[in-house]
Image (cartoon, rainbow, N blue to C red; front, top):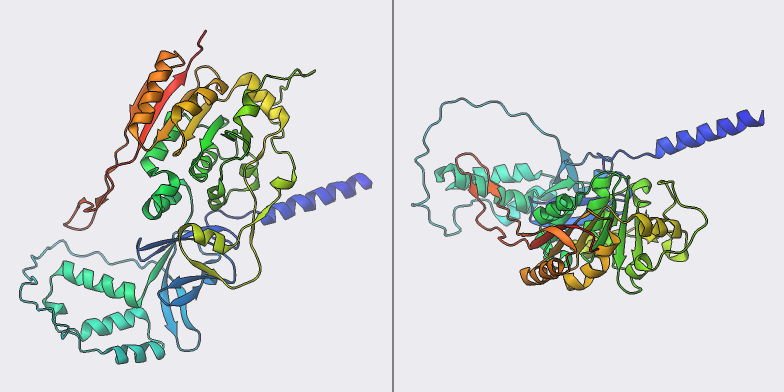
Length: 444
């Protein structure tokens, strides 16, 4: 009877755990989201809760309608006579196929005079429409109907006019899922110095050159806020381990990992250990560790769950308002590696290495961390400038520590793809840093 009772309790526990599983395709309460306002005009990181809000212009909008919506959903600001302004989800509408007959548009803007007299609708009338609960699309249609010059403009100018008015009277918010690419693009656009000017193509090159695959033990020197650590953990998907190493006694901050919405299984695979601890002489142990599934995390006072509110995430990229006193808790990544794990890595070595230290000399770090790799293990080192990597490459060649050394400069060009006007973006970044890659060999 006791055995049956224990079995029923374990089954109930498993069922409760399954009920708590969150679908990663939907935005749930407490998860981090990336809000794209007006097609890239503003990028905001936020943590969803019932009291979280987003400020657009001078108005604060509740983020509660975003809870439960699938990532990729589009929301638009709408006005209500009783509720006031709020975010409403826009469902995709299937457009009817147009005919193949293409007529040439002979209109142009040469005869148009910009004297601010083309609009018959006044600001007072627009304000009255808003107070009556008119939607943003209705206001835009009224502006078009009362414009004296709209019909005289050619198609491209009409589209630009509609987009300009839409951003003012009907702002749109795109709900995006934070992952390695979106987080990197958001920081590179807003605060590139915080990630060492690491562009998304350079980040993907680091993962490729270091051969980050499932069940790998990756050694990471991450001084770019945790972006590289999160990208490696995302690719591992809960297999293998990510060990973030550092010099001295204070580890580098990896706060960006919290934005990835990792499960506890993935977070348990993210650990940290100092270079001195990993490179110290191997201690004698009575039994050799043979089980690869060992406990990496050691409980300590510094490894407890840390409180993260929306205002913390907002300070990183943009302003997000939280009026509730309730704080959403997020698990902390980067617990201290256990002694068993450190001994295993001392004996077997790591399978690959990724370095992204914008404020450190690559060679001073590489000469200490390269011996921690197993033989024939690949490594990739990122730096914003070429000369420090060239010096590091020369020293590695002189010391016969690595082969297949090469310095790569990633290059990325984005295109605007629109009907009859496909061309590279007029403003794009031509610099993405440099990556030194190679394979560690034995010096004896």
